[in-house]
Length: 129
Image 1 (cartoon, rainbow, N blue to C red):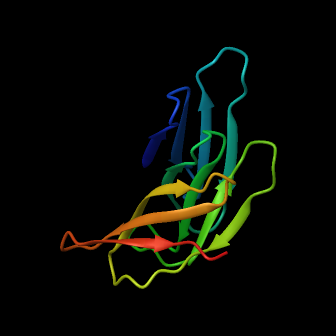
Image 2 (image 1 turned 120 degrees about the vertical axis):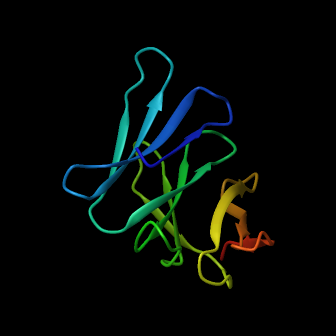
């Protein structure tokens, strides 16, 4: 396991797991009885786990080239039972900046993220609409 994030309601957990063949998957585990575990496979790239949306039904990941850099420009929304949705974001940080803390608008679209530089400075990142 390389990362995890609790849902806002504390009833689910999202995990980034590296498989034996070197690829990754994001697994969503619901802590209520009789709910399935959902897996999203990534055969290329590294899914950096950003967190959950406000309704705790979607996990947001940044698909990077590798574990050290945020390089894709795409945020992916992983919702069980739905196709993976990709959304570009506006990001002008430098090398080794890390994205985290997604905040969704009430309508459900991704709104803002926080980006931290290696020196500790932070900026808000707005998703493209």
